[in-house]
Length: 85
Image 1 (cartoon, rainbow, N blue to C red):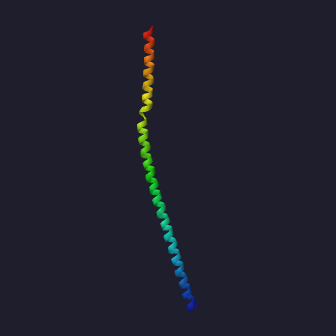
Image 2: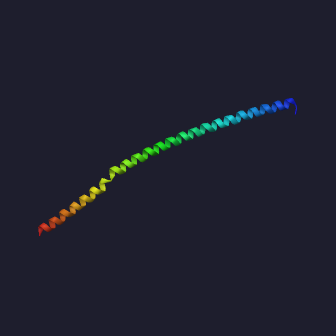
Image 3: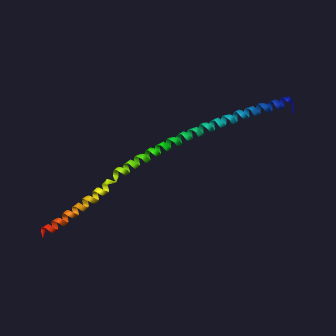
């Protein structure tokens, strides 16, 4: 190799190194964005789970109240039938 060719090879290697570093920087930025979005999604999912748990806890008395009301209505109906005789 002549000195000119080795100088050109070194220059091309330096350009290649710069291109690779730029590509890695771009990939790092993309990965950081994906991690940030994933964190936001996790927070939103946790918030939805909390809200759903709250709704489920506040809903449980409704079926119980309906059952108690039905039993009371049945009891009153039976009492009226027995009292009417």
